[in-house]
Image (cartoon, rainbow, N blue to C red):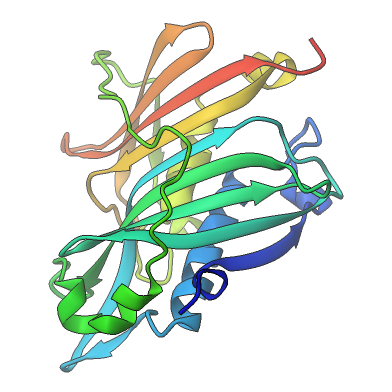
Length: 253
């Protein structure tokens, strides 16, 4: 398979309901687009959700890092490119590139995925299930962004918000959608940031799943005026995910 066939390219437009109140593509909309592209790219190459040896398997995301150099605005057409860059026993690295309507790369993302047994909720050996189909789909091109995540751990012991998972939070597997955590976490940030700054980098590490009616506690720590850590835990204390949000001054300032 040549390189062009290994890369999936998908066009999008920023509809009014895809932008935030500043007129820029919202992070949770972009996050959902990234997940959709991942799913499409996998299915087109015979690597999608399926049944093997009588067991049903699905992809789950473990890590996500997104970097922005400039925003995408309302009504703008843009492209998302994605490819698999590396295969481990139970995980893959997946890369993304955001290209604006002038052909410039305005964002990049890196993610780590595992395929799990939907009943046992345990990861499987990918090469045993997909074999050469997966190996042949790899485009060994490293993402030029910094894909490493820092050790994001909130020291605050008092939650700033609590939320009970509801119907609209759930995904096809019956668990809280991974992008919903980002959406709720961003609600913990000062609204003034979005008026005067732009999100430059998002990091999120997923540690556990949560389900309908789970009470989620949100802990926030301000590292500096432009950097925030958010940690989401279940009421029993189990960490669900850890996030880092880093902002920069807008191009208008």
